[in-house]
Amino acid sequence: MSNTRMIELIGVQKSFGTLQVLKDISLTVDKGAVVALIGPSGSGKSTLLRSINLLTVPNSGYIRVGDHAMDFSSTQTLPRDRELAAFRARTGMVFQGFNLFPHMTVEQNVMEGAVTVLRTPKAEARELALSLLGKVGLADKAAMRPDSLSGGQKQRVAIARALAMKPEVMLFDEATSALDPELVGEVLAVIRSLAADGMTMLLVTHEMAFARDVADRVVFMRDGCVVEEGEARQVIEQPAHPATQAFLSHFHNGLS
Amino acid sequence: MQYQWDFGFLLQYKGLVGIGALYTVGFTILTALSGLAVGCLVALLRLSQWRAATWVVTAFIEVFRCTPVLVQLVWCYYALPMLTGLELTPATAAFLTLTLYGASFYGEIIRGGIISVDLGQWDAGRALGMRRSQLMRRVVLPQAFRRMVPPLVNQTVLQLKNTSLLSVLAVPDLLYQGQLITSASYRPLETYTMIAVIYFAILFPLTRLAHRLEARPGH
Image (cartoon, rainbow over all chains, first blue to last red; front, side, top):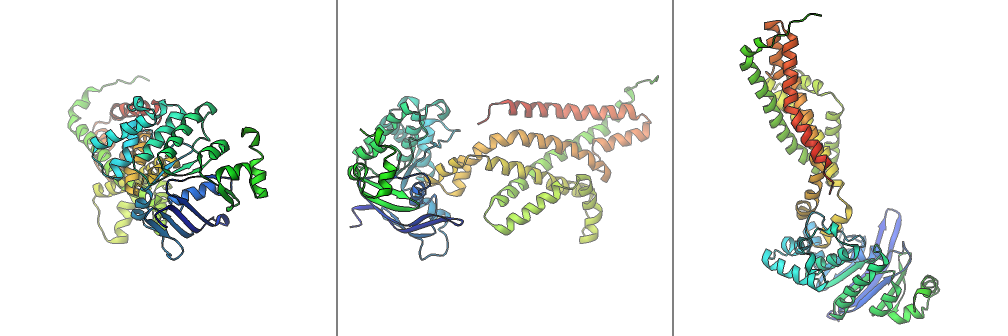
């Protein structure tokens, strides 16, 4: 059973001060599955995504990615720096704001995780970086600085940087929300190709048509709770819950 | 006013002036280095999760930022020995004071540089699985450093000017030597003009450097 489930969350809770952002979330993602997290802003979907690689450390709950699990219900002490780092190294994350390292070239950005965290020899890491840049269609930009790239190119570099860690899981936090509309397609195309390769992925997205077409499952969140979850086309085209229906009604003219 | 300028007599004091310049520049370099080292420590402690350390370091910074360095110097030399029974030479007291005074300012500049780095950069490094030290070394400090250099150079300019206060403890810096020459020659106009020109000649290139570094489009 645990072989088919790549991500498992049980009873995850997170509060910022008195504001409870995640209320007892349980969720599983099968190996090779693509799951889209949708919902209004402030619903907790980004916080949920960030708690999967412990960028946000939950107050309680159980989180497993692959063979690595962290249990926050029993331990009083927070995990240490070394444990957090080891846990995070197994997941790739792509951010809305790209967050490329501006003081490094494109190639160095992609090499960084492999060289610093995985201790891959430089030559080997460079070869890996170039092949990943080729995969996202940016092999010719290797020597450039991130600030000379377009938003869509930056995000594709960020995807290559995450892939260089050979992650078991990829997390996308509104990866196309900061992009000009004409640049969204090139990033979605890369995500689509990863899905075709069998990468396990969890995406927070506002691209409903993309969620319907690429995701296997869709999870709708509101107010820190999972309201509805199911097969992607089912949830997006025939949502069962009134809250899901209300949310998706804002998008339906864009869904053909 | 008919004043007969005569800089010629100063030549006989060139040995004294040379020693003064050496003390001024030497104290600046030494206390800039020690101040930076302590300043780094101060910045990291102030940014740490360790509550007690943060509190102590913040108190230290405020004490040294909110009192005149001349008062600190005099206090360290005259008052501290009464309190601790520890006799300090003028040079030691001066070194100690300027180091700590410099550290309180350098520390804040370094801390400011570190926290000016976008939080997304920390996220990106953490998401790659970097440990705190790796994140600092590879991602945060290289970006913070570029922003810190101009204010650090400026602070070092101030640090050099502050060494003129060492004369009150009879440390033979440029100003102190100037006072010696004046009392021997009765020509304060030429002497102090020369002293000012020497300070200017040392500092002007430094401020130009700071200006150049500031003018570079920031990363």
